[in-house]
Image 1 (cartoon, rainbow, N blue to C red):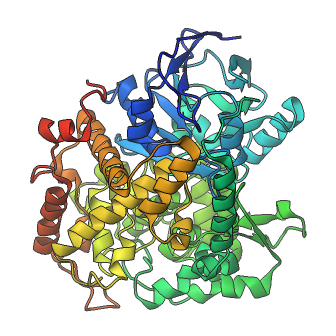
Image 2 (cartoon, rainbow, N blue to C red):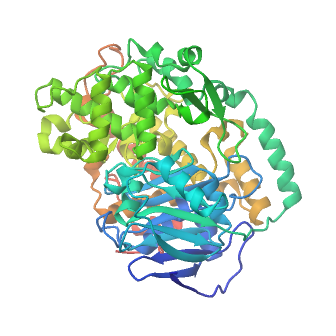
Image 3 (tube, helix red, strand yellow):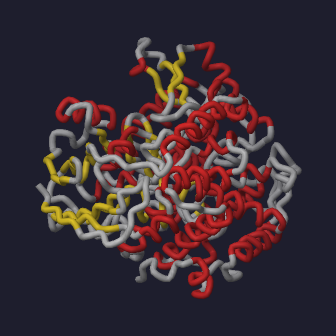
Length: 615
């Protein structure tokens, strides 16, 4: 048992919160339940916002992310456990071993519901267990148990073993072999869902933790339970409307053919924007070739998860693999592979071993082009080879030969090969690019470059701007920068509430609707403008963390490949460096930062960030 003490809470606790977080020091074998002030909760809400605040309070921005002192934060939100659809989510926040910058990942799962019942709004883990262990939190009581018999097992195997040992009331967040071996883009997984990007699995593995198990009985009250139930019913009905129909019918992979047609589907390490054999991977084709089941996240009415049968499998759910757009892009088109069986098996390997599919596919595709150019001696690793993809994934998770270099990501590999390789490495701040060609979606190109997490489409949201009347997706202007800021702020709000971003399509006005949700859950009378300021505060705090971690202005940049040369299959898609540089300046100005992207003390004062930790 870990000795756990509780510090007194001397202020009011709003409904929807427990008003405290649990801090666990594995080195000392000690846990402390610490109070969370109401003003902190109101300024940062939960999820990514509260997790960022706790990360800054813990300090260590300059510490190696795999060092024992480096904190890992599990953060919940006031909406977790409420009847509101898509609200069963938690955030993981830490310094990324892949980027050495802030990283926040979100997961929908029953783990969030069980963790909220433990009586805390967040969990902060520091230190390193003396042996491979499981951290068990049972209604606020904390203990470590040996996990040597689980070390080396896949994510599903680990979860099954824990269910058999502890029973179904416990929910587990686990790592696979990739996290144990500190692969820089290893995931933390629960029930087939993953905190996928940036390597949180490696952070947990560096602490000698195979899993975090939670169970509890403590519930939060709601400020207006009757009205909240009415809103939940109305929102659930709206979530089943036409705004989310495409996700129910085909899932996120529905975008594959559309983006290919727009020359925005990155192919062969971003050498092209379209893939000739893409139809073989599209869900429209997969539907006719194999059995297909649809599922939902816990407490979700949208139901966007689509699972397709593996060829060598039977008809049970365990023989199906979850298919997402980013998986098909990264393990398919980006590597020049069109065989659906190979791509589905690669998806299964990543899920089982705990590997981020985007970074795994991006790093392998980059290495394939380096081999093609004669910069890397690995003739077996070539575009279009399914066996090469599956071999590379196995080598990565074993840290075997070339796999050891691939396990550190494309930026690290490129640095070992020189400037010419860095020019084509598909990364920003070390995070591999998602499945959107920057030359064909230029507002998103800006969002990928300036994002505090690195190249991430979910934190930016600027793809929506590219397909709106406010921008020309093939021509970046400074006017688009303000729209990119707005979309990034909306994402920060959703990620702190926490709600699924697909739900935004069912909302009339995100800020007004979010203010109403928070009033019914917490009792706060928040205005839409206060929530806009909240999102701005959260983004700026992430930036402050990165500055403390060593950020420099030249990090807000895309690889040279994307500048001043059009796409081979779309000559009108050309990203001009001068226009991009001007847009970055406009983005910084819209944020109230300096021209180079620094944050001055006056802005910190205006946003209420003066108590957010120091280094």
